[in-house]
Image (cartoon, one colour):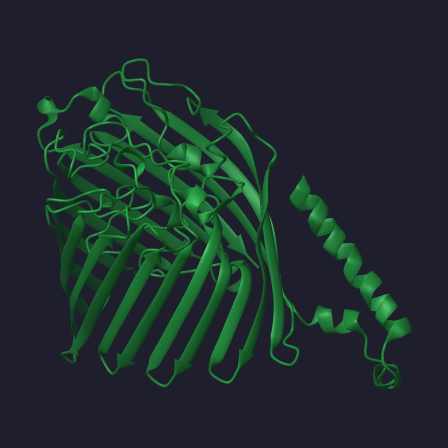
Length: 462
């Protein structure tokens, strides 16, 4: 209700401000008849309606889950005035249906993993008061520079919206962007975040451990939630494009916690009738100071952890067909750690409904296929992968106790045109099967492997 009240307030205040402006405006505006309200009407409104049905089916007697959420939101971006713009957006969600979201599995005691993030994971029984003010910023653009201050969307290979539920991540801070010719540079300092699956805002240090936080390298439940000291997150990125070559480099500095660098290079080789995609990516991560806390049992990353990973891709594009082979390997000297609350990693080998964060001593080989169907607006995607993790008791390299598994995904996406332009319907399915099913205890099976996840999503923007 807070969000609805705010939208009504903004809708009422614009005409009021315009009227006051008519009375108190400068003589030049009086002579021209110009009004603030008229200028505001030239801004851009964005209306968004979303429906999300999700269902998870686990093996045997383990609990199954399902939920349906619908929501709507409004965004506004003002016209440019001497380089300045103001923007805001908000969204509200209603829970129409749920099954077992607040119920612990009687066999393992585990809770729901996927569907709960459609709503507020901290209050599963809240069905109606799911609203939040999201973007609220002022920006300034001059030449090739653009600066944004306030609550804003951020998209980078690791820190991003991870918009695959009802609402995405939104970050609060300062971002400076510079673009010229083939180069683009982005620098951000972020102090707070509202996280997918929540309605509240958290400081960056408070956001560590909002999601379930796994095990520490000593085999005990991680204890870093509410125990991390950090002033915020600094991020800088550099992109370059020329002809068929593109490269990007990023550095993420979580003050007093960790530092991670990421590099990626891609090249498209044009063969005339077809093209070949070649790519390589890598990251290196170390702890900063004590990894967030001087007490080992309460820290996010151990001081001696040094995580390194390498990814590669080779793909072929021919007509309507796109196929690729993708690889990722992470060393055994530590775990790849990046708060899941801040975004989803974008490796070549990434697939829906599982991540590689929290892993070391692992490798993945993934094949992907995309097909642009003859039906205008209809696209299909498929994926199949084999992911090898360390043992379930390898606490130093398997934070979340993920078994080695086979992973399959499928997606149908239809974007309407003409009269229904802006309407997008998706059906997505993911299936994961343990490589050694008989050796996996149920507490490591539920919501991880030997399961199906089904999704039906309707989006409409206008």
